[in-house]
Image 1 (cartoon, rainbow, N blue to C red):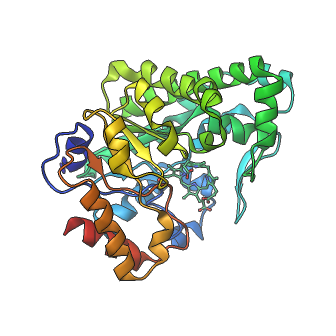
Image 2 (image 1 turned 180 degrees about the horizontal axis):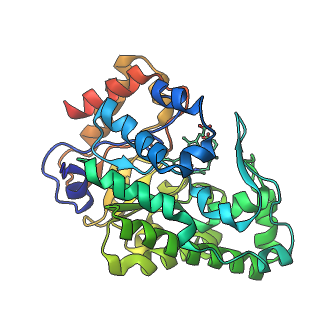
Length: 335
Ligand code: CP3
């Protein structure tokens, strides 16, 4: 087993930093597009053989230091009965978004037995992988925002209207998602994942105090709920360069940073026993080879000697990223 990633998560890495990329199994890879031409995205997330195959694609091609389970943060809500599907070049759609208090009150209990395909894929992956496997879930605030908006939107107007005009029911919704998420992550842990990451992407839209009340409190609930399993937990959100001092209160193993901050300055606010991940602007991968190398070196120099740094992007890789740029980045980090 390649232990670079686990050592960095434990802030005990004395070698080069490990590298993996958020959304590393995705449309920028021709192998992914070829499979995707034959299956819907939901099929790819629900058939164990496909989950396993797609999870392996970026490891086989680029030898990343960690694999991330191929799935989606919205899969948890598939059995909420709100008509989740993914549309070509649009993204996730809920045919029946949450609009009323009754919609919140009548959300069904979900059974983790319905997710046996995820557990089966994890068990299969653990037989062959030579790198740690990351399981994941969405942050309740982000998952709730998709359930309410019904699709990807430019602002989170409907979500914020719930938050401001109906906070009690909004809390009830967040609380239900957090409880289901704990059960969902425990299922992944039982099946064998090595590390967990929570993606609360749209926390970016919250003010300081609303972040604490509507995002952080539920990340805390989840981290506390799974702490007894002793697995490393990474917290990611857009806005983490501002929210990092609050995220550390949950005592995660690592915080995954967007690209708006200097990691060196963030390190001054984050204790040495919490690892830092990310910070590379995914758009830099559109640049020429020399710019990619220059910017990667800048980041590596900044974190040089830090035993808890994991190279990653500040958000998921863009679907039209040239694969050569990914190769340039990895070669540079490895060198
Ligand atoms: O990192 C990985 O490779 C693991 C798989 C993964 C996917 N989605 C696969 C995916 C992970 C960790 C996610 C997380 C996710 N999903 C987030 C949080 C992280 C982030 O990027 O902000 C969010 C907000 C979602 C919801 C979601 N899923 C959206 C908004 C979209 C459409 C937009 C887009 O980027 O395509 C998806 C679809 C999706 N999830 C695809 C993949 C590979 C593309 C599906 C396709 O092939 O058409």
